[in-house]
Length: 409
Picture 1 (cartoon, rainbow, N blue to C red):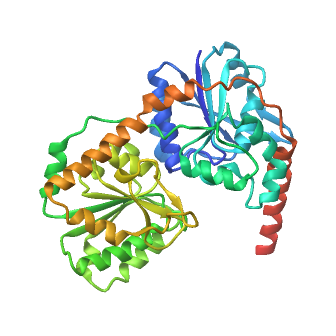
Picture 2: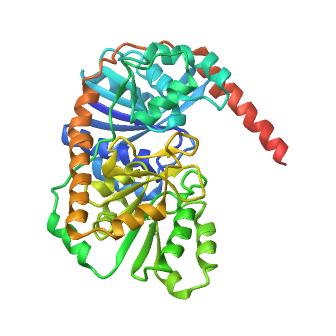
Picture 3: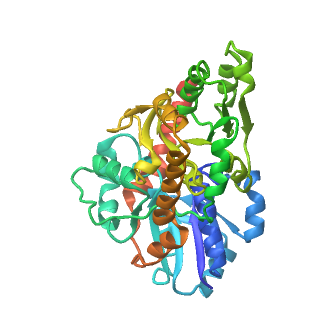
């Protein structure tokens, strides 16, 4: 059997990483892989994803870390005996990469194990540079060419800042793969001529990471003072939901409140109809790509802020699907000025913008092309266990969390 598996220490929640994993699982299923998902004992698969797990027949494997040793069901391990070459394992953190290498120690020559950096902070153990360099630097230096993959220039540049003495020039960038449907200029023309100008954002309501939504609401209130046909739709759920609802309820104009639609969580396969009806999308990460694949112009929001900063338009820079607040270019624009540019476009300008967004995502983010690049990686040699990473995750981090908890009490 050819095995395709992914690891996540947080289980399978609602977010961009999980959405990308599911797209990769779809690709793997269509290419006759057997599917497996690894997570620590005690983690959960969020209910909204279970239908996809059943549909694709993704088996769930739970593991327990015991010092340097990793315990996993013997039945799962026994199934590895029938594994064929060209199996593939995707990890998204330093600890899951090391855990995967330990789990597949015997089958090392049959399976590629990649560390796919899907968030800038994934290359860190913690925020202390000295700890990172001391405990994780030698591992990254060893894997940087054949095992390490970055999702974009931003994540790669962040790694360079964290490990400034390390050369990542030969590390690959493989962009987030998407299933790209056929483009319909007729549909975008219909949207251009509809009565309302609809702004859409889709995000896990996790603040301050996705705090831009708070700034977007302020921007929307200001725009409505001049343009009364603009609507705002927010799709997502999370800890920040109550905060947003309170913010909206404090808006003094009832007509503005009535045109802000909070839809909560929607399954991934139901999001398409809302994207297709949008005049403009604002967000970051995979949602920017989701909008572009239907030809919807996208404004790239800046992360870790509660204001309205943006890095620009996706159709002007396809490499940028997000910026951290302290990065160069993160505060380059404000939502209002970019929204007004799209709002003021002629039919010809708007349709060209829509077509440009679609062309770029089709060329650079097609799932087939991305997975082809991943399968071509030479990552079949086993990486030896890292005492430093094991020490941090299994002893230092739990102790720090325990001490912090005691302090909070």
